[in-house]
Length: 456
Image (cartoon, rainbow, N blue to C red; front, top):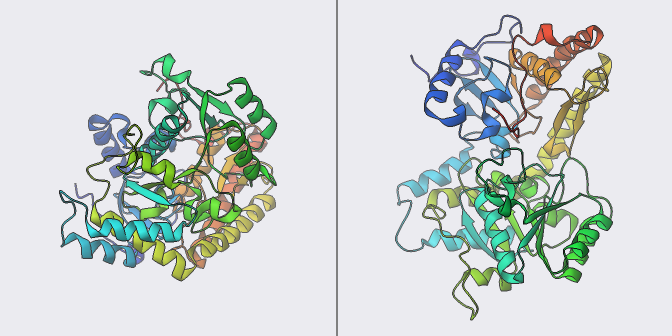
């Protein structure tokens, strides 16, 4: 079976009837994946349980805002590699920067000059940080930040924002989720939670565990804007209680501003972590922060050494070159502003389509325009996986692959217009299901499932 369909947009299939839409090659490829890869994917959020039954496309290739599956279908893609490909697939400036380094070698027994160039570029882009260390994924750097905070403070507990869905694959966080199998309770007990936007509750937590909490870690912004004074209030609380303030900027980095949420809201954390958009799909992440803390993981101090980050592939030259190209492109081409403008246009169209078909109270967009997600609600306006399944099935048949409505800068006006048209058709079906008080006839199989659940 040839699984690499190379047809361009002109040879792609157009929208199909959702009742007749099928992906036979993708279905066979998913079966092969499950036989060889636990979960059938290397990230749970990419699992086929996140899509309608037998309608989980297996991707052949992508370019710009479009991807092609092994069945030959082209889709407008949202979510963009779990928010990592914010410039679009195979962006020419990034690809060229990577290509230049590939012929020069990718990894050496000593640091490459590219490492200092990448550090200088990053710290110029994120001037609130004084030192940076690169790795390959977000979990590594968030865990390194937590370890460093514990070392600096001498305290055992970690306080995570309980309103934010994910921080790391490591035990200190995953032990707090329904997928905690294999993690000792003694580890989980050291992680406590605070609510986003509630300074009083956070202070109560810090007081209850006085001199025990090493850090407060949170996404500085998410599906809602931070309340006025909230981030500055957290900064003050951390200082007063002697703990480290960590911003997880995996999502907000670049999408909120080139310097992340800290650059937009003008509140400086002690440590922050970046990834996703940093490499436009290439594997690179960063831990950044105050020199006096970061140096504890280095050689120029007199205290106990902290095993901060030590990764064989953390400084691969082509990934660092990709990161530098991304930062240059963002600054020179005003990418953050473009992401906001595209998201604003999409949000307006989707909301109008939902309102016109009578589902405006059931298909709900949330988040900053550059980072839109949607919630599907049932007849009683409760979150519903069944209605999400119905909606995703209609989108897929219309050539829109959208686990979220997170935009990339590669989208064009025609892509947005087509997406809104497909959403409008999907909303007509959504209304029919609401009127019947039963979406089951439109599911054609089991509903999609949440990532974090105890049983498979």
